[in-house]
Image (cartoon, rainbow, N blue to C red):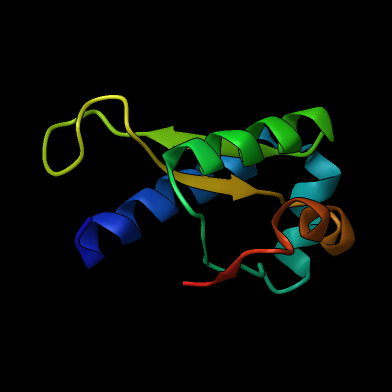
Length: 100
């Protein structure tokens, strides 16, 4: 994906995960600096595995799949947001990933 497309997918995931979070988690995130870190997964299947881990851990999360109007094929998983949630809980899911 191009840089602009990637930025849009990350924004979609961030907003969806925020919306999925409990009000207390939303409030804590808003008042705690709204931390966002962009990491790189290994593959589409890796994003799907991380999505499953976040779901099993009970964390707010969002896996974005593209509509296919531009670059990726329809249904391609393009971005995953985990949280807002306590940093340690997010790190258990994403801590092994490198910065994008």
